[in-house]
Amino acid sequence: MNTNEKIFSRKSAPERSARMVEAIYGCKWSLTVYQLLQNGKHRPGEMVKSVEGLSTKVLNECLRKNVEFGILQKNIYPEVPPRVEYEVTDFGQKFIRILDQLEQLQDEIERDNQSN
View 1: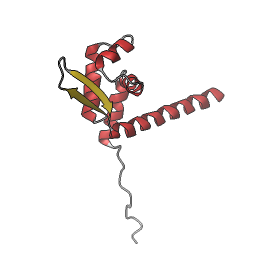
View 2 (view 1 turned 90 degrees about the horizontal axis):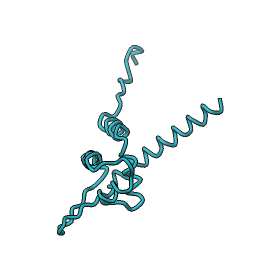
View 3 (view 1 turned 90 degrees about the vertical axis):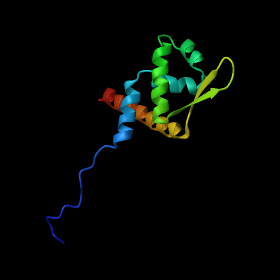
């Protein structure tokens, strides 16, 4: 074997998932939306009424971004007036578990910093 032969190539961050994490954490309302969904608030009107400072415009942008990433699914019911509800997809469940692990890691870091 040639000792000068390189056996490892440069490792890069996973582009799409890194962008997703950045976009979700960059949107200050996404984590709140996940919490609302977990607590049975699936309609945008319910969400806006449940959170002080959350506007319909900002919520719609946040929901749109989460649907584009495949974290949430938008369900439109053919009723009059139209009813729209959101739910977490299977992929979204996996993604939210990762975000929960990041939050646990942050808590651990903060505990370690307080004890030092």
